[in-house]
Image (cartoon, rainbow, N blue to C red; front, side, top):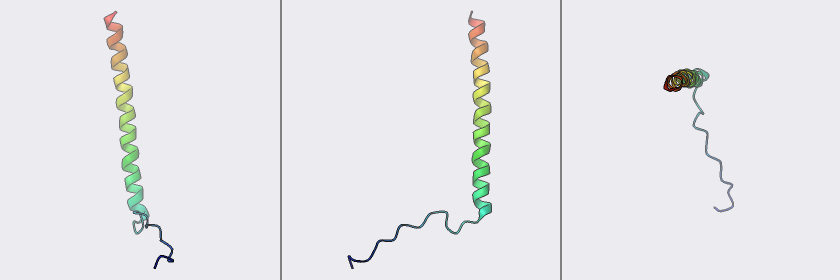
Length: 54
């Protein structure tokens, strides 16, 4: 019993089709793009605020 090799666990994505993976990736990338847009907007806001302070 101890001589048997231990098989590695199967990946979670086994059995998922390519469309499911593509959908998850597209959702992730759209959230990244939204975050980047919000970061740029926040930076502009802070720059204007700092300029108005003096």
